[in-house]
Image (cartoon, rainbow, N blue to C red; front, side, top):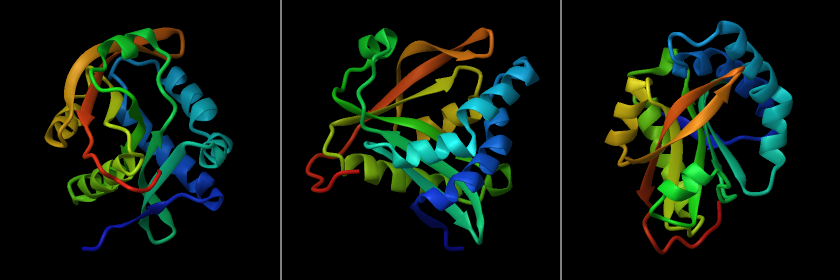
Length: 184
């Protein structure tokens, strides 16, 4: 099976939002308030928000394409973190942020996530920065296993606001290969 991964265009914003609406709730803790999850999807993962991220300098969204559908996506950001917990935890700096990484549940177990991670890390390495970091909810065991298998290691903790409550995230990082000659 060939997995089609390419860079998002403005025409992909609605399909990205549709994928996010299905995939994001799976990454939330089981006791998260469904209204908070829905609000986050409406405000942070809307088609308008994706369009803004696609257009933003230093942001790259990669998509898993399944025909006309988006079956998963990742977003890397070249802006350096300002969160003091992240800054204190990272041992590699400057670093690319792997801001979002989601795969539609219909594509779990098919190699899609591994292919998307490979493409994402290649794009991050092309930035020329020495490392990549991400935050992941401490209760998301499936994602933690996947990120560890993908070469990330836990270096600290931070908080993520979901509605009126804070969730606890692990901060993970990994070194990127040196010598890339293009920019993400």
